[in-house]
Structures are given as C-alpha cells and as structure tokens.
Amino acid sequence: MPSASPLSIKEFFESDNLLTLDQLQQLEYAAGTSQLTEIRQVVGDLTRRVEAGEKRESVLARAGVGAYVLSRQSQADRLLATVSADGVALFAHGQCLTSLGRPDEAAARFEAASRLGVDSVGCALRRAGAIRAAGRVDEAEKLLRSVAASAASRAEYSFQMGCIWADRGDSLTAVEYFERAVDMDPHHSRALFWLAAENALRGNDDEAVRLYERSLSRPPFYIGALLNLGLLYEDRENYQAAAFCFRRVREYDANNQFAELYLKDIEATQGMYYDEDHAKQEARMKQLLGRPVTDFELSVRSRNCLQAMNIVTLGDLTEVSEQELLAGKNFGETSLMEIRELLQAHGLRIGQHLHKIHSREHIVDQSLSPEEQAMMNKLVTDLNLSVRSRKCMSRLNIQTVGQLCQRTPDELLASRNFGVTSLNEIREKLKDVGMRLRND
Image: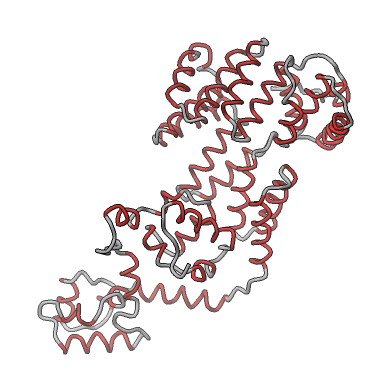
C-alpha cells in the first residue's frame, strides 16, 4: 500500500535516479487521485522533449512509465523500447507489451528486469503470464510451480494460476483462484476483470457491473474492462454512462475502432422510438400464451387428448398444426372445432407460432456434410461473442449457429441495442466458421 503522503509529481519525473517498484506503486495510486491532471501535463512535456531529440534514458524511462500509468500503452512502448538499464522501466514495459498482445517480447522484458535486481519472484509471475499468453500453458505452469514456495502468498500468483485453469477450460477452479487473488488484494484489477467477465458470461449482470467498476477503481485502466462495462451500461439503457466509458477508451487509444463504432450505435439508439403500448401488448400476449388449457371449459375427450400429447398451455396450441392434433389418438373434427373456437375467442389460432418450434429444432439438412451439420448445431455461446451480441442472441432465443444463420441482417438490427457494430461482429464470427446470415 503506497504511503499516505502525496507523491511529488515534479520531483518524480525530474529525477535522474533509477526507478523503484515503490515509486511505481505510488505513481499508480496518484493517477487515481486529483494528481492525475498534473501527471498528464508532465508526461506530455517529457514526451515532447523526447520528440524534440532528448535521448537521456532517465527521461525516456520516466516518460514511458508515466504513459503506462495513463494507460497509453502504444506511447509507452515507443518511449520504453530503447531503455536497457532501468529495471522497473523494463518491468512496466513488459506489462505494456502484454496488453499490446506481444507476449514473447514481454517475457523477455520481465526476465531482463529480474536480472537488473527487480523483484525476481514478481518478474517470474509476470513472465509466466506472458508465456501462457503466448500459448505455452504447460511451460507457464512449470514456472509458477518453481516459485510457489515464495509466491503462493501473493495475489499475483493466485491470479496467474487462475489464468492457467481458465485456459484449460476449468472455469470453476479458475474463479476460485481469481477470488483468492481479490481477497489478498481488493484492487487486483486483472482478477476483478476476469471475475466480471465470468459473471457477464453467466448472465449475472449486476455482479459483472460491480466487478468491472471495481477493476477500474485504480490506474492503469484496462481498455477491455471499459468497453465491456460500457456495453453492460448500454444494455441497461444507461446511455450516458456507456458513452462515458467509450470516450475514456478513445482518450487512451485514439484509434480504437470499437469505441468509435459503439458511440455511433448509442447515438442511433437514442434516436429510436420506444413504443410503450406495444411493449405492454407483448407482455399481455406472453401472459395469455402461458395460461394452462385446464383453465378453460373443454370436453373430457379434448382435455385427455391434449394431455396425452403433452399440450399444457394456449401457447402450446399455437405451436402445433391441425394435422398434428388430428393425428392424436381419439382426437377428431369435433375436438378440433372446440379448440379452434377456444383460441379464436382469445384472438389466437392453431399453428400461428409454428415457426418458433422449427427455429428451436436442430437443423437437419441431408445436403450438408456431417461436419457442416455439426457446425449448424453448435451453440452460439461457442462463438465468443461480445456482451452486446450475446444479449441479442438471448432476446431472440437464438441458441445455435443454425438458428442464427436463419436470421436476416434486418431481423438482427431490429433487436434493441443491436447496431451495425454487432452485426459486423456476427458476420465475422460466422465467416470464421464458414457460415453466413440469410440473405447475406
């Protein structure tokens, strides 16, 4: 925990001494306070000096570390790329490279920082994370086990072990490790991020929002957390908070296309007309379709026939054809007329929602190969969609890739909070598995 006394920003950035981990932690803490404005100003001044030809490593190191704390990862990478003697700067650079998706370079920087005397256990933990991100999970676990005696009491160790289990598909064990990391360090932003993502995946939106907000309580901020939180806010129609998140992303990454597109979607969504009467009508219809057939006066024969066919509600009657009813044992024209009259009295008809049953069935097409058939019946959750797209799939009751492929672009765009950005994501995900939307 950083000391309570405020860090002297001017002295920190003007010093020519090597950085310490304690100073890095103090700077991260200061960036979450009213000192943030001063940090931005000083880092801007130092960066301009570098661009003007300043070559001193102490200036590059402190300007780069400042950019890292401000979540300007690309800028930090440019500044720290030539630093070689400041171990803490190398440690910060390793974290930048991890965020930028360059794990092998990150691992090398953590190893170099360790050789320069920076917390060898901490560097090993971060290096294990970079190795895992590069796809070498077994190697990463071996490295973690090798430092377990010294590292097991650290939140970072539990976090990295959680990542190992997550990569191996054991989400329950992974969550246990992430929760342990947060218990050790309530501000461990990456563990909070993973827990938030797990809750969002399971539909626990309230808990996901709370955890994402906690993960953003202290710099450096993670763009992924801001984007996901913005999407959750938007799904709750809290457009002002969502726009704030997406604008913050653009502050850290001016070229982030997702933030730009999501902001445009919000502008389009806020211009949409919400028909409250239509929503109430849909709610009444849902209640009507859920009423049991036993609530109505039917003949004993009709009631017994419906029970034998496992038809329980009025909604069930709208999802079968007259031919299917007549195929039931002892179900004749008299019973059919009785059912017709019952549904007509409530503004319904037999088979009017028959398409819903077909949309829920597995796609069976003899013209498809076994591989194509398996892909059509694959769950949409396996496509790794964004929060917004997953919400749309849930609202439209789309469970499989085959059901998704039966939808047209216009049908998806008609769903609340589903814009062009989400449509393009769906198209790309389907393209990756050799599929496409209807009429595309």
